[in-house]
Image (cartoon, rainbow, N blue to C red; front, side, top):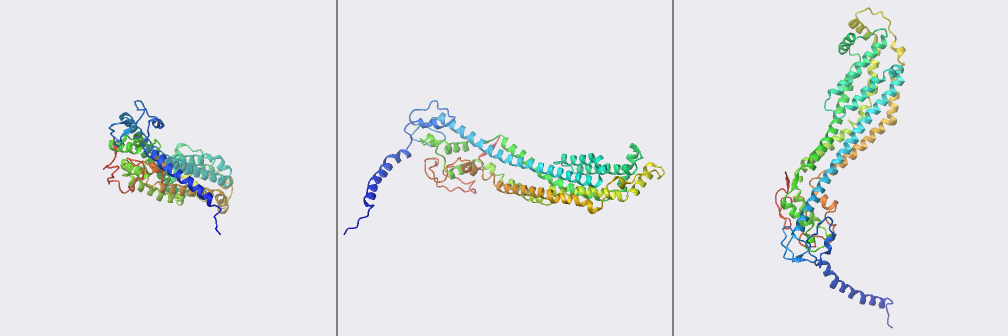
Length: 470
């Protein structure tokens, strides 16, 4: 008995019909894909190209300067020259676009950091306001402008290179507190310019606030130096990238010739305008053309490494919310020190600057201030810090971590510029697609490696720096 496959007749029928169809495809259609175009209509696919003088059919015996010699072509020498100008403008614009993106990165983070520093100053001022309203009541409210001016001066000093400005702001703050405290204890005394000058001179030896102003000055000085350094780095990098982007650098004639061959000569060879260069061929050509930029990669990487290292300090030691957190309590501590020895300080000032008996009635500072123990004084701000300040410090730390991560990924920007333009920006074809090798469509066999910047290639033979500055 004969066993018959029930699908046998169907399979046989399919094979009988499909195999001749495949043979017909390879025999008829595939050769037409590989050979040059039979007419010049495909040239209209190229945007922005003046096709005046273009033949209707491929012409023979055209001697091109940049493109490989072909039997017949739809290009003319004028079209070839126009393609050369087109690719030069495209590459220069692409490079400048990448530099502009990099510049925008530093601009954005410079803005973010400055906003965060100002926010930290604002938060510190708000905490001081809450603390002082609860602790000193009417005395603070009637003199709050002194503290508002102090924090405003801190905000304006962001980015300043002069550390004396912080010291000056602190000195002005404590001088005004010193005068206000004395006036509060001696309400019947009228302070003329003479007495004020005398009090100012006496303040240094009197040291009514102890060492607190010096401690605050050291902390704020270090913090502001760190913040100024990062802001200045962002600004300097912006200016540097602007100078590079806008400088009158040009590509060499040899480089432009190779770029023309890579980017557009497939058109003159009768291939599709959509046929892109092979990835390795594209990177090899652009690497040599942009080797001048690659030369600054090492020094730029060192700068980025210093930014990454410095950002670690911004996360913790110089986190603005942490750095400014103690300031309200420290200022309050200095006022309390004055109050503890208020009678002694007042007597010395009266004796030195007013030259009168000390029996003039003085109001009690305790009567004017809200009485508060040190424990009660510290309770409100720590409660605030636990709810808001710590969260803001953590949020800033997250920003810095993101910044450091992005800076790490920027390393090698100049060295990998060719790879970025070819692969990420789509100048070259994707892997596995038909591509242009510079002479034909097919695989580009030379392996691309970044260390071969001075080696010669059979398809892109060149030497030296292909980037000229004029």
